[in-house]
Length: 161
Figure 1 (cartoon, rainbow, N blue to C red):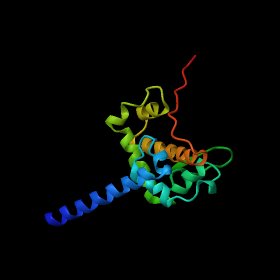
Figure 2 (figure 1 turned 135 degrees about the vertical axis):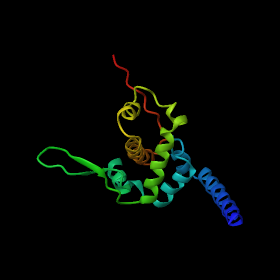
Figure 3 (figure 1 turned 90 degrees about the horizontal axis):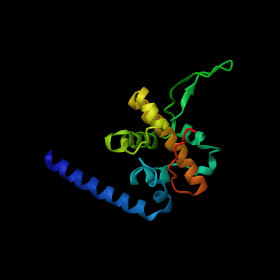
């Protein structure tokens, strides 16, 4: 069993190195990796499995395609939001949630400004809910980055006057 594990670990290491090499060669993957929480594996998955971003009208449509938007039970002008739909591309959705969780871990938490929406949400919501909200936001930012052909721009916090 230990020999099989060693062989599989070697195989995984070679495939991971190949993915990193391919991600460094393509401009789309390089652009996506400028966002915190997205590494070579997520960037290559988005580039490979996601359809052309021009087929989505906005970032919410892309997030809905991934299954990262809440199910709506709205009626009569009252908005009721439920759990995420989990329909669509499960692989990319799971990778974005894992990337968001890595952003919320100890090392990533140090770079989050205290006045940001993410810090305020982390104070009052469960960690997994915050990770899914962050993954939703990341999906919308991916759509914007790829449609505008721009690198990630770190949002500047708005100071109170």
